[in-house]
Image 1 (cartoon, rainbow, N blue to C red):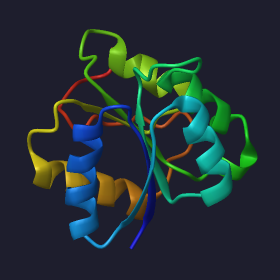
Image 2: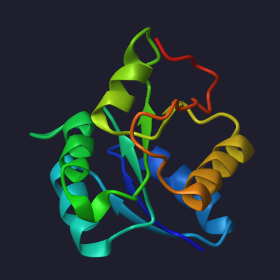
Image 3: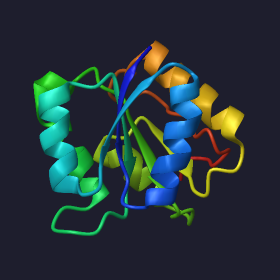
Length: 141
């Protein structure tokens, strides 16, 4: 069972993620803004973070990913980008910010999504500079 922080401003998406991952025995914590996500990450020390890249508020998801990456406490914490941005360059932009995976919304294949999250949690964070795969089939630019 993993402790997973979901930073997502869309209630329906949070509910879907909660349903899928809690059925797998994982403990989920939720944040709606980047600011709250950063505060909860420091408090909870999650096993993984699912980060919406288009968060409303003062801190978007890219910045909410960069900040923990500058803190050695989160060196081993995988961060998975959740985004509707699927244009050329979006995948690479999320990886440059510090994400370890990039999942394009909407989440259609729930089983594949659950398997990807569980794989990332089990494997932990790859070393910096490793070639990273996109669970959605996107290729790096």
